[in-house]
Length: 72
Image (cartoon, rainbow, N blue to C red; front, side, top):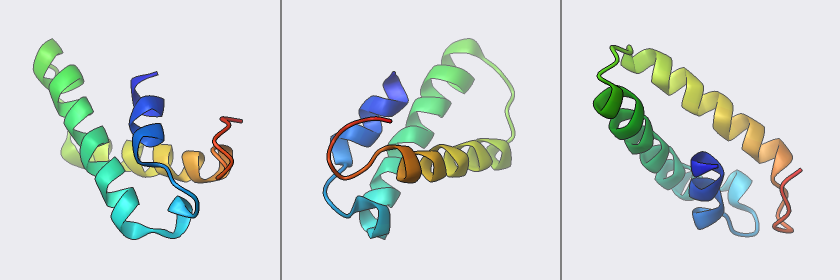
């Protein structure tokens, strides 16, 4: 839910092709993972693993969250 909220916050028509928007999403998702997963739970997670997860989340969102505002 939190990650969907982050994507919805920045999503506009054509966001799938806008690197600036995707970078803002990426930054907020990174912050979420480091604050909620690594920081709050004191887990040791490699930054490369988090980057790969964020890449997968954004790839999925580009396909599933069309410009019309509906999650699929």
